[in-house]
Length: 104
Image (cartoon, rainbow, N blue to C red):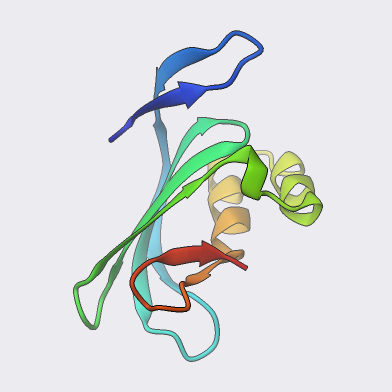
């Protein structure tokens, strides 16, 4: 869903913004994935992808509790939606079970 919550300081429902969509390699040796990133707030995102070899849909909800200081610093340094997409995508990997996405 493109509807989510911005934790605030005033908690409110928001419609996400699509930052970008492009084909990426998620780590070394991983299959190509068509990745799309949506932003709900500065520290909440939804990442969805399609494994282009298997056509499997892969999803990841990213919340502030999942972010390492390194990820937060990279995102804060971004000046555009495209830069945020690239920064976040650089931390996304296929999950260990192959059924979803995870942050590295």
